[in-house]
Length: 101
Image 1 (tube, helix red, strand yellow):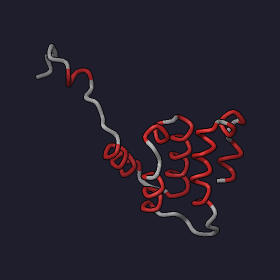
Image 2 (cartoon, one colour; image 1 turned 135 degrees about the horizontal axis):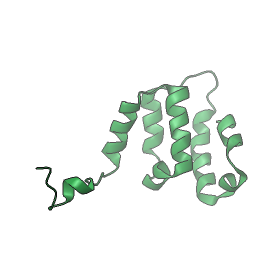
Image 3 (cartoon, one colour; image 1 turned 120 degrees about the horizontal axis):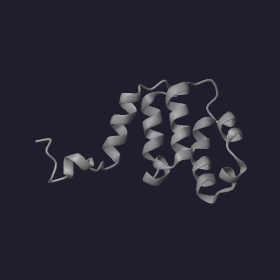
């Protein structure tokens, strides 16, 4: 968490929304010597709002934690993400003039 927060640009750290989000996740970083599990990461992510999960800066932080700290498989994260975010159909799936039938 310290490495992550220190590497964020000052404008991000001082942004009210991002600062609130960082504060919310900071408590999870205070557990020394314990490697968080996939279940714990999902529990933390479930506490975030949709705009927070979709924010480019926060999603980069999530990806960093998922990949380098928790070592959560990408497909597992994407499955969770699809379960909380309504995905729109692609243009070809929703286009009535599409010839891909």
